Length: 203
Image 1 (spheres, rainbow, N blue to C red):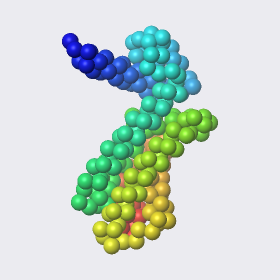
Image 2 (cartoon, one colour):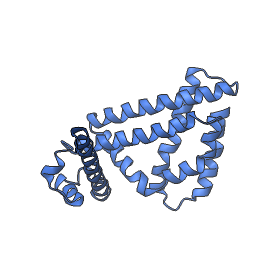
Image 3 (cartoon, rainbow, N blue to C red):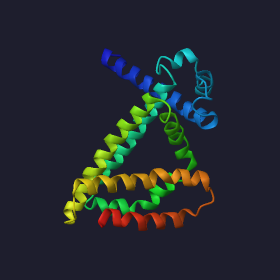
């Protein structure tokens, strides 16, 4: 095997091991919370020694940082897809049901809520979350501006900023509603969200 081939193989192995740790950490955080889950518990769930985990993550904060980066990458991919749409504003509206379903899924929202809770008391995590939000928000504002310009709608900075914040707040708030009201009607909520979102996009 060439040196380059071995290097590529080592990178793939390290990436696979990091994912193994993150999958285990997600399960442990969901079960025990960020502070309740120890590195020993995470290592056991990952099937590797605690010392081995420290080859990939220096601390639980670093694991949280990896989750924040993963989510930012996920949102960036969604934003890039929207940018390619002929009518990105309509595409946002058409995807409401999918986004509501995702926001109400406990398998998806448990980890973000744990991260937000940690960010409320940990300045390092708060900074990471805020930086990720700034990055994703800037992408979304640019999409709103382009979509509204194409429709001849106002693109004043204050309008875009405030509407972007409210749109994000709607979807970030849905997991809390699911937590407080687990029997809510998903279809009815999606229909209500559609009614609320349309004027923000097109008004």
